[in-house]
Length: 216
Image (cartoon, rainbow, N blue to C red; front, side, top):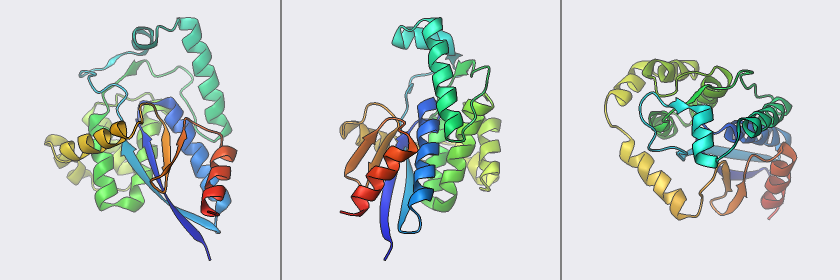
């Protein structure tokens, strides 16, 4: 009889390692089928919750936040790009240029998870592609609605959500829950609400953990 697990993927749209980790996790989930099936849920985490409208130059931001040099940043981008390619995720060759506030993206993801759970993963990937592959302006309503449309969700409903404050409190509650649980960096993969795998791991690592947990 197939084993079923739940996976809460705690992450931020602006996190490149989250794109790598999710792509690797999806590969792992394909490998364990059909003996193991999973419900995958996306939970919010904001790397830059105080980021203002229009965002910030990415090099400036990384220098301020991590005290990294341009050479170090270029090396990390190359590493991430290679890791992404190994799991089928494409990063923009020229980088992102700017980093943006992602709170509205999280509100849309929460809505999808509540009302259209099967399409939440499609929206997540559409948003990650818009950010990291296409270098889009991730606090722009039109960009967010394009991702909604790509995921096959109701654009007018999403437009109404973005025009107001719907799901704002719910997103903040979920963020607080995971922060209080000790998660301070992403991606964080929480399996069966008990077991944590931190960081953008290779598919083989996720597969091994999933098989071990499913076996009890």
